[in-house]
Image 1 (cartoon, rainbow, N blue to C red):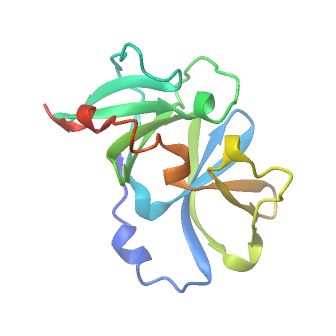
Image 2 (cartoon, rainbow, N blue to C red):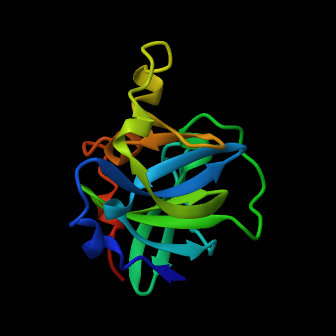
Length: 166
């Protein structure tokens, strides 16, 4: 388990850069603002929730706390695949509480200058991928920047009942 205690350090960053956690889904790179990431854990046992959306894998016990877990591949329309030793659960803090996001691998934490970030093209920005808030142009690849609240279920789909102390 890796705790991300760099959050307090990021509050002193100039507004001209983004501090993100970069991860992979299939062969593509995505990123979330580090301030939303609580920790990154290895894949662990998940209990299914009958009747949940197809991209909700279920719930897991994270040090005595029951946390809902979403499969980001399914949520983002990326074909599902088997979990590997690199598969991780990125635990994030959102408006609805803590949520685990299953990703194929976490690659790095980095600061991206704002001048390397472009808003998504109107062609790729649509209701089905409203979670995309920008694209970072790095030297060796493009990284899609995700809006956490756009990825998570609508607060009206109350999964918070599954996010409490056990």
